[in-house]
Length: 435
Image 1: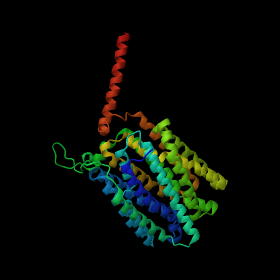
Image 2: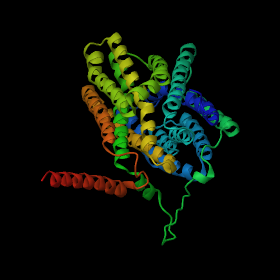
Image 3: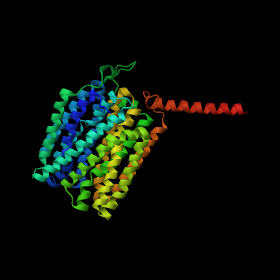
Image 4: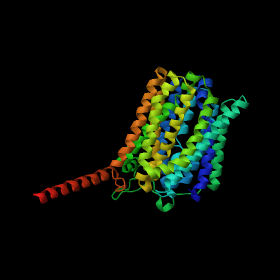
């Protein structure tokens, strides 16, 4: 699959920014543990506040991109990320880190805008392949980032704060690269102004009203599925460092090695397997398959890690988790684009990220506290959430997703009512003919 020319600059700047952010993944939790002396509960609170800010920021930034274009919105996100990483490097207290990470979440993240840009210039048939390329690119970035920082920490006794400075510089470089190479994907004729006056009113249509118009039953199913899958993954993300420390005595170097190797596997699956599986099995079915793999992983994780304390068993299960998430991650934006109105793509992708952010608020708080009580309870919850995610996406197929996309909830329910009435009328006609 050839990446459209208008997306090549996007992928270049995204790789630079994600690589910088990936540098911080192995060290963030240990930065909180070793330098700020925080427990799992406090780390979970910091992650939750970051995600709470994203819950507000992602739909708003997505809606602004629908009105003013994707390019400006994405460049703004990169600048904001650079500033916040730099501020993170300077914090010395729990309250300072909490404030900085909360402000960092207000940008909404670069991924929803990136996904909206892909949807702008691709067809339904092209999207699985392009999303697979994007997933592979992110996988490489998430491989090189942790791998690089593991190598650096092995060679030099580097203070963890400098890792956040490096992340800030990479985000800034990505912004500069984007300024010169990033192309606008949303032409002015397709943009939706912030203020859309009604027929008998000069009042502006609010973001909340726009969101309500997009709340079709099928999208609601997918959004709930996104919440559940993110809840499951973030239960692991917010407790995994504590789990491997308690079970195997591992630190940030070992965590970085696990993330780097997992990134390679995930990148290959998204680049090579996901487009083919989506075409052969269908978007909804392949997502359900990924959810089943993740569910099995969470069921077996405490047995392998805490009961057996087997590193080999633990790493084999990790491959199962990586495979499942590598299928599910590109599946969500692909499914959202399949069911969403085209003129609200930025808003809808932002809402999707908002549901992920909502899970990110709940999961670290719940998982951090539950892990301090019992790890078994945490991963049982995660297994249930992953299973529910697959069921919710399957339920989206029960609705007619190719009609009435502009109608919102009321219009979609009316459409379903008309179909039901038509079916009953045809049944009565058949009975009369038989008589």
